[in-house]
Image (tube, rainbow, N blue to C red; front, side, top):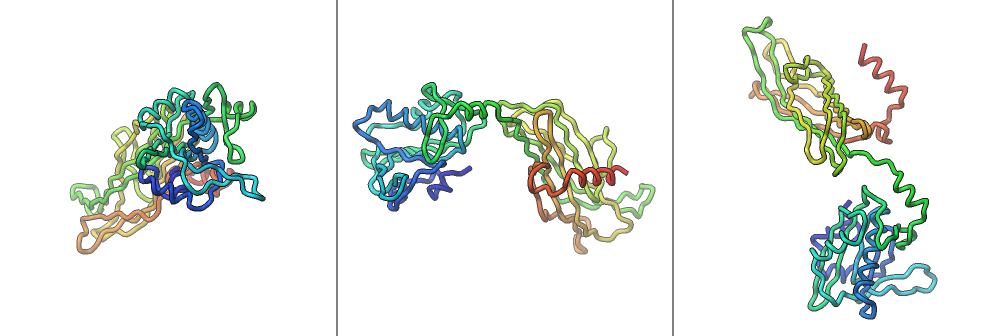
Amino acid sequence: MDYSNKLLGKSIEKLTYEDIENYFNSPKEETDLIEYKSYDSREKEKDQYKNIFKAICALLNSGGGIVVWGAPQGQEVQGKKEKQFFGQLCPIEFVIEKDAFVNKIADSIIPIPSGVKVEVRENAEARIVVIEIQKSDYSPHQTNSTYFMRLDGQSRPAPHHYVEALFKQIKYPNLRGFIKISDGKRTNNILAPNPRLTTYTIPFEFSIWNFSLLQNEEQLRITITAEKGKIIGNADQIPGSKLNFQYSLLHSAIPISESLTLQYERTGMGTINLEDRLIILFGGKNSPVKKTDCKFSVKTSNNYPAFVSIEVIDIVENQMLNSEDDKLTMEQKVEYWKRSTQ
């Protein structure tokens, strides 16, 4: 998630020192997604770093978010429990190099976190650091031998039950499937059994990606279905409205893809104008079944009857079959399966 854009109004790469100054022109309060740290010249440098690592660790173990180091001092406000942060920044006085700071994070948080972005912004002899942290897939993380979490806008030591729940959370490879359809053509084979039969062919490709680093998927199964067209695969597959694929292993960051063809047959030499739908169902040994659903139109024109144009009407990608968006009950799915296999 782009927390910086959501919370600070700009992506972290585009933030300037002046943007942070302007941000604190109005009072701000800490939340479970953002923490403000001011620089204190009376505190040892290593202790200030410890506080930053604590905040990063807490966000990794919770919902992710932003740490602003160099923020104004928090001020008590009458009638409010939470401190408010506004006015002049308290920027960092010692030199901070981005790469060295990232290395400090890697050395101080266990296991080494990913999904942490750091940007250092300077103004004269002062500097501020903005850190964007994604919720970790490899939590719980600890720093200085302690696990932390975000609670009521503060970074606190995580209780045993919370740490235990993080250790026991179900983790599975994050698979995503995509469809890419291209324009096609009309073909006529005068040697065919029915020379008046016109065939329209549409090339398309599907790919399945594993977005989870260091979590390979096994026994990947894929089913692709067309509502109206006939799917043509390789020579070993029987053309039809449904094709199945199986793969023993899907590595992270190395996709599996297949180039296929949709085929429509019509009698005569007229144009074609229809809507069709391609649906991919995919899942593996450790991952839930997901669906990518693409609805598109297939058209030829009188001016260019040999050219078949494709227009995607709607596409829904990577929907989990047990998500709220999937309105079919299990009973409806069984009935649909019975009808489709008759």
